[in-house]
Image (cartoon, rainbow, N blue to C red; front, side, top):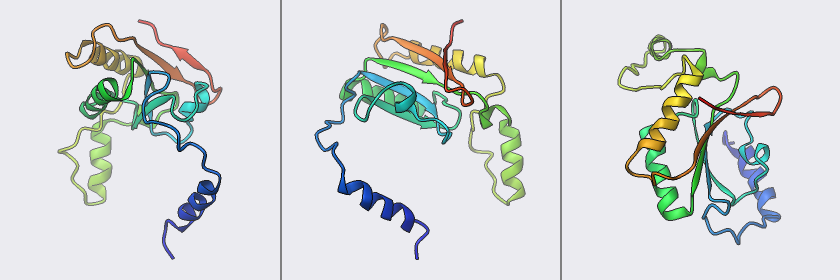
Length: 164
């Protein structure tokens, strides 16, 4: 018995009624969403989207890392993305620890992670402002591309647009 048998069985049931084979891989609504990996977030549902509408980029803390920028470049020039929403959320675990805390925790398990940056979020507004600026100022994306930030409330389901 595999640790993944439940997932393979669920996939087999899903595939019996699968109807999205006509999707092209392009972002039909021209949108990319950078959000957190938190399982309480349903990016398509909370934004009124359906499969094929947007590119969803997820990582711990919804941070705009080098890999997110790389992926946005591909999404813009190859997959029809014309606008980006950066969407962190309330009650995020990344706001409750520092990189030093994570290094200490892993060290307690015998794992040295000091070569990694975890991009923890001591100040969510400052992190979001930094990440929006990073996208808007990169020379690799169109200078006039709309970029916005909004914080998703995991307790109410509401999205609050970010403003400086």
